Image (cartoon, rainbow, N blue to C red; front, side, top):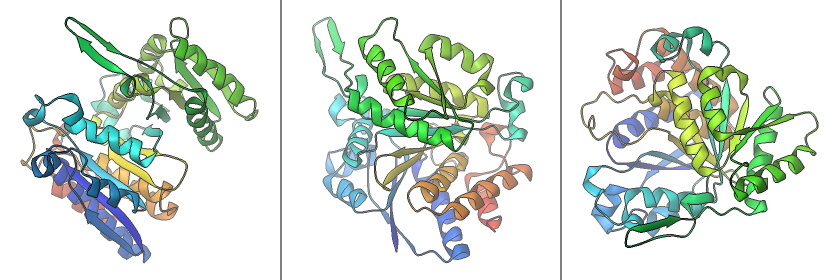
Length: 347
């Protein structure tokens, strides 16, 4: 029996995770898997219930689970809270608590969606990349504060924190096109100079994988001008957050992109990269495909069920091919209709 903790969260979170749960049920039936889903509050809804964005009971459930599926957290209702009590603090705490130090965000546009992207179609031909983002260090976790009209946020990295995520990126590249691009700001930042030194050292253990370095501002430009040049991108927390959101436009909509947050074991955190979209919550029009594709990553990395993962990815492709397209991609399909289309195509 595999246990999956489901943290629906806020906004459209409950709607999209409901469809993902239906897909998990369909996969379990098709492949004879024994999977139990257990729900718990996190984010704004947890603040309303307990006063904390990540209650200890929720973290305990996640730690004894085989994987965690997250919807989205946050919304205007909680924006005035101090930083440590905001819904987003719960997400940072969850990543830290689970030890998930590497965030994987694959980008491979569906042919039908290329016309929805703001780039010329020829620029998107052959795009198939993964952003590997360091997740538990850097400026998001450094010392911070305010003193009158002055504020500070500290970016700190150790060689060990850098090495483990770069090794993961190189290992992933071995199963792809064997190219790693390490992105930093080594012309200015000491943390980036350390990052580059560690990348060079790790690369020696992977002689079959090529390594190139790129400054983050140049990468932000080339990601739009020639995205097919990239295979595996590895970078620090802040740069990875920004660049992976930028890369989402290559897929036509941020609603299409899944993510996996991994550590040293099988336990991982899986979620779409988009936010809680409170403006469309409760209207039944949210795109669930990013969440459903996150389930495919969950099956692949935490449950080691590659065949089932491919079945979900194939079903999403077939659903889109059949014209089951939600509003953010120019269609009219509802959240439930998208989920049903995937469930019907699990084979």
